[in-house]
Image (cartoon, rainbow, N blue to C red):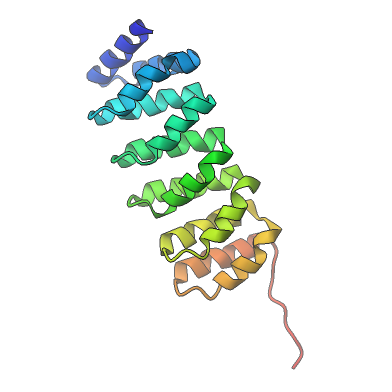
Length: 192
């Protein structure tokens, strides 16, 4: 493992992303045995080390590695958070639903959008949290939730999405309308 760690360090210093990717992948193949080193790197003050630690955690993919990915959602750097979100979208662990919902209000619009996409990829396990998020006081959370629900298209979200049509935010109302259209929920006209 020390040779892989040295290879990763050298690739980072050299700015060689291809070599760094290969070293991170190989570290990930070691499974949980690589976690102590990756956790030290994830706590580093060096943003590149933290990013590559998260990338290697993504390659590990075990429950312990997933816990590290969830913790990385609180990293101060948006690129590190984005890397963690993308990894969680790939693995789709149910325990990541609530932390990803919290990222819908990320200061980085990019991370927030990735979080909505990750929740959409998680599908049914994310639906109850997304429906609840439509009631958030935060516009970004409501918008991301409506957008994700439009991708998942769960029937149980129809009442909440109908209510979101009257949201004070035009963006939330637009996403709710698009979601309902994706679900083939049209307008019903009543005779006077």
